Image (cartoon, rainbow, N blue to C red; front, side, top):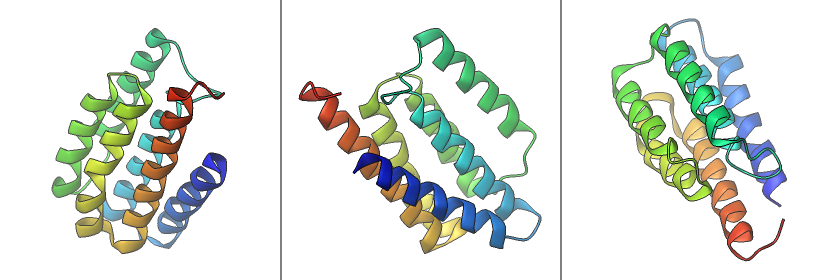
Length: 134
């Protein structure tokens, strides 16, 4: 179930990326896609080490600094990266949930639904991990 939700979220963001013209909105979709991959790093089966996760987030921040992401999305994205530094599935869920409204305002309902789906997938993975399931 979690894999299906992740695939749906990723497909939604990739569709947004393909439909967007060059510029800040396209960069915003790309930034979200990169952030989604950073969130996957704290979930099984990937489950990166703390050091690798920190390095991935550092690279993400460097990459985002060169993109012209719309301001109303950049600020929450930076805050979500800070939340994700905790390195847990629940932090990833929180980070993704905090992005849903700004994404809806800047990129539209379809992109926001993709982020909300990723948050549900992350929450499901956190719940499975909490119950001791792989």
